[in-house]
Structures are given as structure tokens and as C-alpha cells.
Image (cartoon, rainbow, N blue to C red; front, side, top):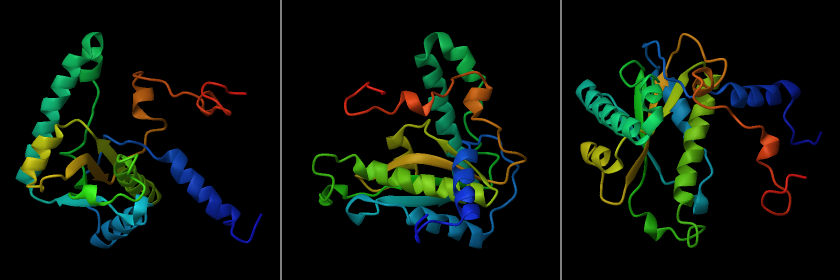
Length: 216
């Protein structure tokens, strides 16, 4: 242990939040207190970002009619995705893929406009702006779990259509619809595992040594 190491209980809490984070689809309505929501957004804002560009923008959806329009766009894409899945179409349509109408808060996480001005760290990897926003979303997710709130990332939408609906400027891009709020319980395992859609792989299969594909 070094002087910079967290205490045992502190470390355990961090690893617990990571292990028990779930992509939630079932919500219990309710509300998220303003102070708590601000705390969660501050956690997101503490994420690392390439060149300190802080490309994240969060749009809080408080208009019920607008929320319904967003849900309708997701439903359209859900049907298109099912069609593209072919033989797995019926299984996919049985899955609950979003909780937009049930959750306490809906946030749209987006990339800002004028990102091309930021070259530091992005000259050869321009997608690092997306990586930075993803880190902010993960911070928000882990903080929400620690606060006892569920969160779900919805990616079933056509970005341009959602951007137009939200009157976003040219060059910006929505990356996620985030459903946030109280839940009756957290899934004991990822929902797609519980539904038999997919099985996770062991980390040992995904860590290579020196060259691609070498695990020992």
C-alpha cells in the first residue's frame, strides 16, 4: 500500500459500483432530486477528455411531449434493427430495450459542435472525442449506482433525426439517450445475459501479450 491508496472500505466501494453497474431498462418512476442530479452531472464532468476539450453536452428532457417523440424515434429504430437481425428478429422484439416512458429523468448525451478545432490528441484519432464522452457517461453511470439509481444507455435512434428534434447545431451529434431514476431492484447480472441473448467472455480471453491474439 502507498500513501495514495484508498482505504480498504473505499476501494471496496469503488469496485462494487463497477461490478454492480447495470444497463437498466425497468424503472420505478419517481424523481431525482435537483441536488442529486447536479452531483451526478458533476461526476460526469470530472471525466478525462483528450486535450481537455470536454466535448460532452447533456440535454435534460423535461417536456413530456418531447420525451414521447424521442421514444417514438427509438421505437422506429427498434423495428429497423429487428428487420436487420434476420433470424434473431423475433427474439430481439421480445427484449425491453429502453425505459424512456418509465424513468424519472431522460438525458441526451451529445458531442459538441466545432470539434474539428481541437487537434491535440485527435490528429490521428479523431474519435477520441467520442471516447471522452463515453468516459463522462461511465462516470455518471457509476455515480448513479452508488446513489442507488438505475441508468440505461439507449442507442437505438437515428442521430440526425434526434439532432433535428432537439434543435442541435450543425456538427454536433447525439450519442446516447440516458434513462435515469429509481428502480425496484438491480438486475443480478446483465439483462442480456438473463434473457439468454448473449454471454460475457472472461477477461483472460481479451488480454493479449506483446502481439495480437497471444494470451500467454
